[in-house]
Image (cartoon, rainbow, N blue to C red; front, side, top):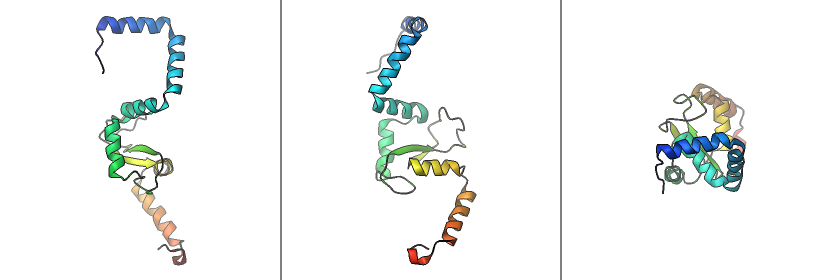
Length: 135
């Protein structure tokens, strides 16, 4: 359960942190190292505004697979970078789905440009033989 702190409590915490920065940093390092899963969910919530339940809904809609390649791998949150161009935090409305690391990186390297992606697809199809089972 989350409780709201009073202004006096927040001020006390600010002063304590100001006087104990190294101790606080060490605690944070240990906590993150000992709780990687909690840290991951906090980061997803902070950056994308996506709760565990929201992430799970996307996961279930996609059948537990990457939205592009369909592989069952560790999935990352994908969002429209043109909506929220900063790398810090998104509005949460631009979340598109869940992608594996390889597809997420490939999409980023192509600048999410449909023209480039279609050109690449045309190129690959041009040099793929029918004997390999692809057209």
